[in-house]
Every structure is written in structure tokens, then in C-alpha cells.
Amino acid sequence: MKISASLMCADLLNLEASIRQLEKTDIEMYHIDIMDGHFVPNLSLNFDTLTAIQKIATKPLDVHLMVTNPQDYISKLAALNVDYIVFHLETCNNPIRLLNEIRALGIKGGIALNPKTDPLALQYLLDYVDLIVIMTVEPGFAGQKFIPSQLSKISAVKNMCQNRDILIEVDGNITLENARNCYNLGADIGVLGTSVLFKADADYIAATTKFRNYVTNIISI
Ligand code: DX5
Ligand code: ZN
Image (cartoon, rainbow, N blue to C red; front, side, top):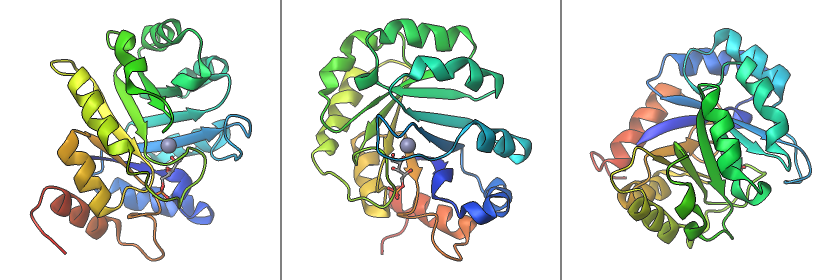
């Protein structure tokens, strides 16, 4: 399973040290949560933090927009050279248009689904999307509990995406156990936040190695 490290969960007083340590691991991406206090009742990272992150981060940036008007953020994110822009299906009346705009900028386009959203809503978007994010908690806050009903959504989306070049990411309370279940059902990427990676005094190399070994059944606990 690929790892996208959720930087809103890092110790923000020591963000530089965290990123420098993460750079030494083999994680695949950084997950950047952007909120507007409207679509979700919280705020997180912003364009200025992203600019600072870009100065030292060399791995791809996977931006998760939890905002009511995602179209307003695209050009600024493009200027910051992000790799993925994911917006919520619940926020957009013309998702094909927005995905096309994102792809036209050379950025991969993604759709996130809230727990309430039926995966069938994705069916007509499959030709236009590179990444599907299945929220396994209600978006907006770290440290919540995994919603088990979302497991069947992973299988449904995996089925829908057969023979297509679309990645499936799971976001929210991705523990070792939850990650293994999600991976077995077809999830490609796990967003690692407070549940497994960002703990006090964590050794990121040890934590990510243990994560991969557990998810692929090399070790049990
Ligand atoms: C939700 C956020 C969180 C976070 C994951 O909007 O995207 O899911 O990064 O961290 P934990 O492990 O605390 O759920
Ligand atoms: Zn997220």
C-alpha cells in the first residue's frame, strides 16, 4: 500500500523537522488538507504553509480540498506545482468540467466521497478521474473513528475501476488493522495521520516499515 503522510497531523511547531525526517523514508506522497471552515467546520493548511512545504519537500503533493468552492483554488495550487488536486463530489455541480480543468494544467484530478455519498455517483466520471478518495471518517478532523460501512464502498469502487488507471485512496483513522482491511479490498493508498504515523517521538522510518509489513502480512502483532 502506498503511503500519503497527512501533514496537518504533524507537529506544526516542528513541521520542518518532520518533513526532513519524512524525506528520509520511502513514503510516496504528502497529503495536504485544505479546509475553508464552511464545507467542514475547521481550518487546516493553507497556501502559505504549502509554499513553505514546497521549499523542502521533494515527494509529490496530494492536495485534499475540503472547501465549498474548489474551483477558486485550482490556479493557485497549479502555481504551487502540486501533483494531485482532489475535490469533494458533494461540492461540485460540474465535476467533469473541473476535472478537465485540473488535467489541462498537467495535474492529476481526484474526487473525494463523503461517507454519505453513494459510490454509484462516480460511474459517469471514470474517464476523467485519476484518484478516488474514500473518506473513512467524516472529513474535517484528525483523530476520529473509522466508519466500517465504508469498507464495502472500497470494493464497489474497485469493481467500477477495473482495467482503468485510477488509484483508490482511503482517508481517516487508517490504523494498521484498518489499512490491512482496506488494502485487501482494493485500496492503493492510505493517508497516514495521527492513527499510525504522527505520534509523539515517532520514528517515521520504523513506523512506515512496520505499516507496510503489517498491511502485506509480513508481520502480525
Ligand atoms: C480528514 C483528514 C484526516 C487526517 C487523518 O479530513 O484528512 O483524516 O488526515 O488522520 P487520522 O489518522 O487522525 O484520522
Ligand atoms: Zn484528507
